[in-house]
Length: 359
Image 1 (tube, rainbow, N blue to C red):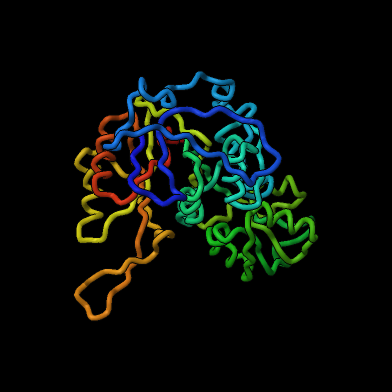
Image 2 (spheres, rainbow, N blue to C red):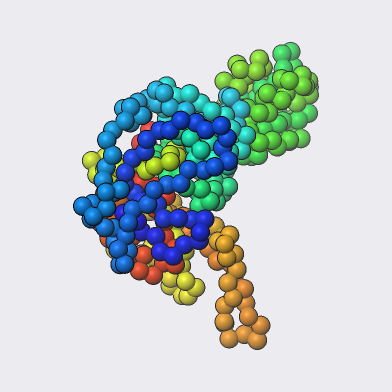
């Protein structure tokens, strides 16, 4: 079901049903594949399947049958081998072939261009909060959230063979990893911090440069891959350090009601008192629980002029609201809620309806 109102050109509406066949990798990743759309009537409701052959479910493919373990799937992630994102990809698809990417956006592009079948990218961490870059990229690209996976993050302090903690002056890692270990690093007498793009990349750099006064904050797998010693384990300041990753695909999955599902949406509203309250009420009145809400400035129109009866017009930020619902798009209750929201939202898009990770 398409539930999008007028939207920016870069943010097309996303259907919530259907499947996705794999395709052969092209030679470059510069030409993203475009998602197919269902026809809608003038009222915005889906055209019945009998009038719209595109909306009919396609036959199962070998990719569908292999998906539970990921056998034969190529899964993109950001970082070097040994990154926590790679571990999350392996948890989501145990038998997959992982594809390391330099940047988050590269992973999006790899899936769009059929270089990879899935991408597994972080959305939020229990200590560091949301990864805002990936929220922004969800709107820029035409991928669908098809699942989530939670990974317990256990940081280790890694250094070259023979290096002692007493000789360390600096720690290198991803900014969030450094923030998650700040108190422990200070207690160990390591005051200087160096931020890099990913944890495993820090371990690789230290090994290649044979640094003797710098340690990496990374996984035990990174120590094994790059031949480093583990000087300390579980150095995160809080033992409950969990990162939630999203699984992305070119096509959405078919929502169901026989198991717990989550639906992620993004919308914007007109300026005015009570607009956000009104938007949230469409879910509260139907007893749909919201598990997360994130606001981000609207990049297409970051400022709006408000007439507050002042001599000088005021400029306010215009926001997009990202919301996770404990509901499946196969549930008529959720469909009615989004139909109600669509009546007054200036923009509404379903990012995905997918099984909840209960692990």
